[in-house]
Length: 326
Image (cartoon, rainbow, N blue to C red; front, side):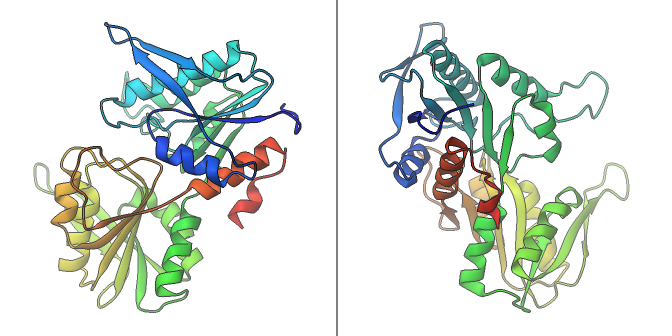
C-alpha cells in the first residue's frame, strides 16, 4: 500500500499520450506525465526506457490497450506490461495500471467449445508483470473485475455523458428517449436513462428465418421522439448505425443522437457513421481518434481526464473513489 507521503509519478504510454498529459494537468499536484522512450528491435520486440527515477513512488501508468498509429492492440498491451516490469524493477512503491480502455474484454466467457477467455488472460498478465492495482473505465462486462486478484476500480463514463446531455437538452425532457442498441446493453442503458430522467427503449435484433437478414424490432415507443443511443463501445459501427435505421424507419423516431464510452472506430466505422441517420456521436476520449483519418463532422469527444485525475489522487491518498460517481 502506498504512503500518502510517497511521490506520485504519472507515466504516459504511447496509446493515448494526449489523455495522459491532460490527467497530469488536472491532478492536484500538477506537473507533467513522464514519457517513456519506446523503441523496437529489428524483430519487433518492444524496448522501454523510463528517463526519470520512480524509486519509492506511487506510479500510475496511463495506457489504453487500443490501436493507435503504427501500434496495434498487441503492441500497446506489451508496452504496458514492459513498463510495469521496468517500474517494479526500479523499486516503485506501488504500480497502478490506468487503462481507460481495457482491450481483450469481449471474450469474457466460453461461448462455445475451445474458446479462450482473453479477459482473464490479460488480467493474469498484468498481475504477473507487477501491477498492484488497475484503474479503468466501463469494462465490457462487470464480472471482469472478478478475474483479478488485485483491486480494480471501474469508472463509469455514463456520468460524464449524462452531464453533457443534461446541459444541452435538460433533465426529465419528455421529448427524448434513451435507447439500448441491443438487449445485452439494457442494464447500462437503464442506468443512463435514470440519470437523465428519460424513458428507455430497446432495439431487439433477431433472425426470424435462417439465412435471412436480421429483423429489428423496437421495444418501447419512440415515434415522434428524439432518441439517444447509448452503448459501451463503437467498433465497426455496424450495430449502432443499423439500430439508427430501425429507429427512424421502423420506430418513427425524429432526431437520433448516439454516445459511447469507447470509440474503437475500426474498419468502415467512420464511413458508416458519416452516412448514417445519427446527428452527432459523442465519445469519451479513452481511445484517441484514428491517426491520419479525416475528422468526422458527426463525432465529438468528451474528456475523462478530470475524472481520472481525481481517481488517481484519491487512490494515492487512500480515499474512496465512489464519491466521484455521486
